[in-house]
Amino acid sequence: MRIIAVEEHFLDPEIAAATAPALKELSPDFMAAFVETGDFPPPDVAQGLGERRLADMDDSGIAMQVLSCPNAQLLPAECAVEVARHVNDKAADATRRHPDRFAAFAALPTAVPDAAAAELARCVTELGFVGTLITGRTDGEYLDAPRFDPILKSAADFDVPIYLHPAVPPWAITCACYVGGLSPIVTARLQTSAWGWHQETAAHFLHLVLSGVLDRYPQLQFILGHWGEMVPFFLDRINGELPQRVTKLDRPFIDYFRDNVYITPSGMFSQAQLQYCLEMLSIDRILFSTDYPILPMAGSTGFLDEANISDEDKRKIAHENAERLLRLTPNGDPDNLLADNKNGPVPTAVS
Image: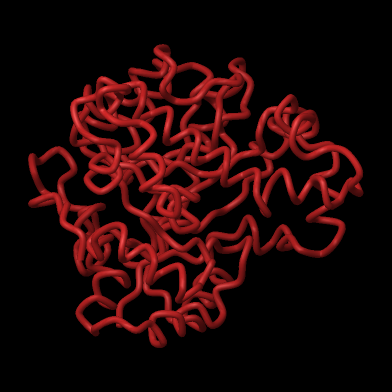
């Protein structure tokens, strides 16, 4: 079965160097918690876009990866445009060399919003990219801040999704919630991969909905990893506590989640979470991802083999939903991204 994995990263030395001071301020012990403990891939794996990555994909049964380079939101304004463009050109080179194996999400210099909107346009129209990946806040602000509207408008105009990726929360949140009585390494992991990343991403999505972004751009689509970044598991609660009479939005919150969101496992291959999410949204809105190279691909496809769903539904998660959302043809090439309504009907009903 063809499998398309949609949250598959590569790291870049330039973006790592440019964002290191900001990351150090947000999480002083991040490197000790992940790199020095051996829980982070070596540079040749993390940065590679060639034969090693392809071999790992072949060994794990992954037909295609949608590449993304995280952390562009931490880039200082003075270098953000140049570094983001460099990263995107690197991803584009990989997609040109292996069009049947790689597609790409754009890294955007959100510190300069108009330039970020222009870079998304370049990536979609010239490089054939299929969306963008946004890693948390920019200068402390979520994407719903008014200055980022050109980016949202660009994504809506080109009908490409925004992947909301986790990021380290602001230091004030870390001090209030995660520091105190814990070792530095436990604190660093609690504020990031164990909890803080996911709570932060859930809040990001809630802001986007509650600020009216999806009323302005009703066809805009978001992707949330890690089984929806906590939102499905609190969906009824959120919907009940934020009714339309309070939010003044065009639709109930639950409708935005079911009509404007796709979710992926991001390597969290839990059958229990899959079954719960299927109660909360349509099978047509679940994608596949491994979170490579942060997590290994090995054995990831066994998750679908073991899932208690029909073969038809397995194909939807494995590749059909991604092909529809990202307009990927069977050989991997994106269809014309400027054409209208290439996604077909937007699935909304719960299976």
